Length: 118
Image 1 (spheres, helix red, strand yellow):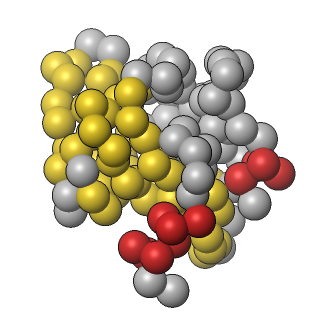
Image 2 (spheres, rainbow, N blue to C red):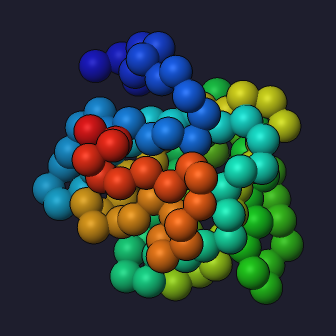
């Protein structure tokens, strides 16, 4: 699989697509643009962000916000309240346990079930 090609099937921002799995983790791709992701956390799961293209603003409670760029990788530890945003289109690969809810327990207009991500 070519990761860049995986983004060609994404028609909407903030709508992750599962493109593979390894052990009990999903590999997802998602495009974002804007500030639609609500503050949320994942009580029991770490979440890996890898930037394929663009820039991502990562915000976490009790920590200074920082910008991730193409090629950057960061793991948000379980229980950490966070949100992400991007002024321009940003392409992200996520690797997270299959039990990870898209926006944690926070339900918003962009929240997607696992079934919607398949």
